[in-house]
Amino acid sequence: MKQTIKGGEFLVKETSFQDIFIPEEFNEEQLMMAKTCRDFIQKEIMPKVDQLDKHDRELLSKLVKQAGELGLLGVSVPEEYDGFGQNTVTAMKVVEEMGQGFSYAVAFSAHTGIGTLPILYYGTEEQKKKYLPKLASGEWIGAYCLTEPEAGSDANSGKSKAELSADGKFYTLNGVKMWITNGGIADVHIVFAKIGDDKNLSAFIVDAKSEGVTLGAEEEKMGIRGSSTVQVYYNNVKVPAENQLGDRDGGFKIALNILNLGRIKLGGATVGASKAVIGNAVNYANERKQFKTQISQFGAIKHKLAQMAILTFAGESLTYRAAQNIDDAIDAHIEGGMDKGKASLEGLREYAIEASFSKVFCSESLDYVVDEGVQIYGGMGYSAETPVERAYRDSRINRIFEGTNEINRMVMVGELLKRAMKGEIDILKPAMAVGKELMGIPDFGSTSMDYFENKKKAIVNFKKAILMVAGAAVQKFTNKLDQEQELLFAAADMLMLTYAAESTMLRVEKLMNLRGEEKTALLRDILDVFMYDAAAKIKKTGEDALNFFASGDEKMGMMMGIKRFTKIDGVDVISARRRIADKIIEEGKYPF
Image (tube, rainbow, N blue to C red):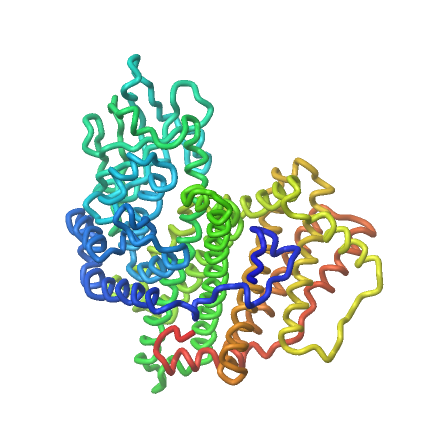
């Protein structure tokens, strides 16, 4: 029987490799969908990326509709509304493959995610029947209108207003929305506004052709130029009362829950983009010669290629682990009698912490990958003729999209502490156990531990380091901890690195059980290097936090604790990276 731990519970419980999903387990149908996406990107998108970057709205609209004709827009839409009704893991694979399509991927993801799912999860039966089939087919394109000139991260402070008419038949909507992806091509807007003097937002489905809806010019952006981004103005727009989406005052909740899915999907898309950049970079390195030698043979280039692949592998591992957790939670809620829409939302809510891990880790990994991709190309990488130049510019938005990475780091820790306070996760007992352990004689473990026992012990110790630092910070600052953002970021990074390390370890362990030791030697290299680096980062981050708020004997004890909990066997990272790079160079692509 599969044992699924609750969201955030990985910190205090161990997971078996048998209970996680890994990308090597995709079934035939999922792989066929992935191939359809790849073929579509290669044949239809890649030859037209330059034209898309010139704000060709007509072309963009046509290409979104083409994806609809292939069934790619309806992957998450249930069959009764003319979709495919696939699970989170399948939708993640689709978005990963589409992530290789530069700014087209942004238009695709905005339509299939935030442009469609609010209606699926919060719409009435009539709303679903009216909108979902046309959104799934691409006949209509969706946009999500939340951000305002003075309401970015603090979305609930938006000033857009909706007033109900005296006869209760329609709302009059007024306001300005900005940074609206697909705004220039959308037929349907999901708009957030406050009704009267309400404290919280409500949501509305608005026909983009309604009188009083006007669009600003296309934004001139650093990257993702091929996606449509405009300001949208609503001036006395009449919205039928039946187009209110969800409950009055419930729009902020809709926005937050939909963003959870947007976050993990962004993680998947950035994994796909990373793989594409690695492929471009290694092919260039194999062709380019300096000093009569292919530059792929230089140690400096091998280091870059290997590190790009290590981060991509870790990000992919944690993203698909979390996606399967969401699916398992949804299935469990449905079995318990919950309807599918509510079950889906509850599953997403439960793994909001892990969704934030995916978004932050994978977007920051992609930034590293594109930066080193440009470096491998050298001066050519700065030329608009190369794919890495576009990838470099397009990547930067991902740390801002779907809640900035700073906001997401605060979500990771805030959500975990909230669940601990509610008694949903027992963090207190394990934290107290770590405190007792610090007072006792260190357990240096057995020297006869096998490879994975050793790794699991290191992961358990990483978790102890988090419990020690976070527990002491909570005691020191109590309910004012949320004002100490640097401390929250430190705890978030320790959590995220530990989850990534554990996810990578479980994937490699599962593959070793399936394929044997010989065929997973390179994957153990990836794991060795990642965990060795993670231990050093967790140690420094923990020490930085303790240097800020601890003092005296308590500080000395915890500093010794951090040292103990991040102690890890030495790794010949240079040789390991060379072996990883040699495989990438031999295959001319991301091969793992």
